[in-house]
Every structure is written in C-alpha cells, then in structure tokens.
Image 1 (cartoon, rainbow, N blue to C red):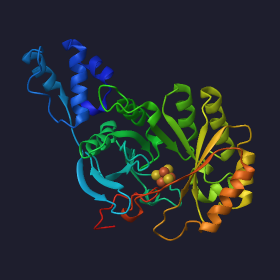
Image 2 (cartoon, rainbow, N blue to C red; image 1 turned 90 degrees about the horizontal axis):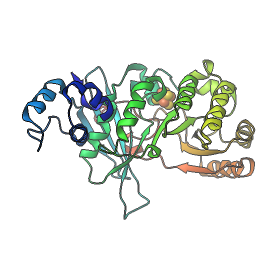
Image 3 (cartoon, rainbow, N blue to C red; image 1 turned 120 degrees about the vertical axis):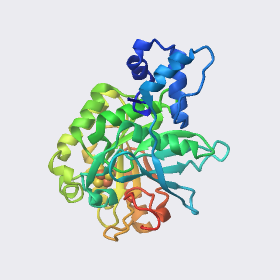
Image 4 (cartoon, rainbow, N blue to C red; image 1 turned 60 degrees about the vertical axis):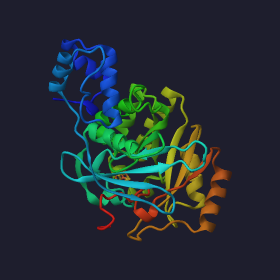
Amino acid sequence: MLLLKDHTSTELAEALADLAPPDRLIRQIHAAACRGDTELPASVPTVSPKLLEKIRQRVSTPSLTVVNKVVSPEDGFAKYLFRGEGTGQFEAVRIPLLHRPDDKKYVICVSSQVGCALGCVFCATGRMGFQRNLATWEIVDQVVQIQADSEHPVRGVVFMGMGEPMLNYDRVIRAAKIFSEPCGLAISGKAITISTVGVVPGIRRFTAEQHPYRLIVSLTSATVEKRLSLFPIERIHPLPELMEAVREYHAATNKRVTFAWTVLGGINTSRQDARDLAELTRGLPILLDLIDVNDPTGQFRRPTSDEANAFRDALREELAAPVQRRYSGGQDIHGACGMLAAVTAAEG
Ligand code: SF4
C-alpha cells in the first residue's frame, strides 16, 4: 500500500506510473491528502471511475489520533498530543504569529521522533529516552491535522519539537519537501527550519544536498567544557568538528548561520561567554537566537532581568552580529521549548 502523506507528488506519480494517471489527478490526490481527507474522492470529472478505483486499491491515507489539545489562555499557543501507528505519543505546538494582527498565521513546531536519544540536560524530551523515529506521514500529518483545526493558515514549520531531526534525516527531509509542495500545504522552503544540537554528519549531508530550508544549530555554549556538561553529543561530535561543518555550510550556501542559545541563568550569560562566542564565530556571519530555558524540574533557571540585560549588552559589545530574543510561549501548557514530554494536561 502506498501511504499518501509518505510521498511527494512526484514519488506518487512514479509509483502509479503503470496506471498512467494524468498529472492533474496526482496533484488533486496529493492536495486532498494534505487537506486531511482520508478517502479518495468518489468521482473526479474527466477521470474514469475504473482508473480511480485502481488507484483506490493501491493507496491509503492513515491519520494520527489527536489524544489531547490544550490552548494557552495566556498567549494562544496550542499543544497537540498525537498517537500514530507505532508505540508512544508525541506532541506538536501551534505558535500564533502575534505581531501582525491583520495577517494572522501560524507556525507549527513539529516532532520528528518519539523521545530522543541525545539527552541534553535541560530538555524534558531528552529525559524520556529514545522510543522511535516517526514515519514521514506521521510528521506531515501533525501539520495537516493542525491546519484542518485552525482558522488561519500555517505559513511555517520548525523541526524543534520532540527528537533530533538530523537523526531521522531522510524522513524529515521528505516531510519538508511535502510541506512545500505548491499543490498541497504550499509552505515556502524558506519558512521551514531544521534544527540540530550538533549532529555533524547530518549538517554535512544537508550542506551537500543544498536544500532551501533554514538550519539552526543549538550552540548554547561556545566552549567544549560547558557543552560537555550540557550536551552528551559533545563527546561524539566535539565543538571544533561542529564548527568546521558549520563553516563548510556557510561556504557552500553563503547563508548566515543561525545559532540558538538556550539561556541558562548563572551558566552561560557572562561577558566571558559572549567573548568565547565572538572568538568561536570570528569571520562567520551569524544570527543569534536567545531562548530562555524552560525547566519544570527547577534544575535550571531563567536569567534574572538584570542578568539578561547585562548579557545582551555584552553580546552587543563583543559580537558583531544580530541578536534576537525569541519568545518561548506556551509555558503554562508545557508547550514551550524544552518542555515537550508527551504527557496530557491531566497527567502533566
Ligand atoms: Fe533531543 Fe532536542 Fe531535547 Fe536535545 S534538545 S534532548 S536533541 S529533543
């Protein structure tokens, strides 16, 4: 059986080539799956019922079960808990873009795995351990279902939910291709962001394949010593190797590199941290996203406002690069960065 949300329309056309379906029909089938239809249409003008029936026998459109949905009364972030075909549950977060009241739209933060093997110390998903990779259709259907449940269009996708996208590379990239197909969800490639905490082979492959999607590297510290205490992956792909891959990415694409910096009060907010970052990235055009930590265990704390301001001043003085503070919403519904652990509101 061909699972519709597992394939791009080109792959679908190839798989059904022996039936010689018209291109227009392939696009219609893809569009229907991306609208959330679970059946092929009963009839399509100018398409023979026989051909439609033959296709019907070859394809299926599984969909995720929505186990729970919670909307934050504070900022409108919505967290969806899904179950797919395999073990475990996983989450996606609908982020309203609040700064444009006349042009309301959403960005969806999707999961690529159930749990995560990388165990970054400040992340709830990391504490779950790894359960499994999500199938392409399970990644795609997070956006399909949320779009079908939403009054405004989804205009962006960030792979910053549960899991390390670069460890489920093929399925993540295929899902990104499906998101950007014009006959389906039509999300611009530039509005699709893939993040990594430093899986160097994935970054190198991403560079070689020249995808239009954005890359974010979660750096959080510019020294090997601190990264070792925060990211177990530092033992496998140490910072110098990561930076070599990042510099190769920039050289091949000429794109500014975005680094995410999870701000951990008292840990990575000193002037020396800013200097280390400036030293590490010398000559490399970067953008720095600051994201306050969300750690319900209380092991890590957000910076005080004095600390956050002092760090921002230090970055301004030491680093010749734009710095933006990312609003990390949905904290009250455990939907903010680092908080996804696939528990329902009642359990959580
Ligand atoms: Fe995994 Fe990302 Fe959490 Fe690290 S931050 S444990 S890579 S989900």
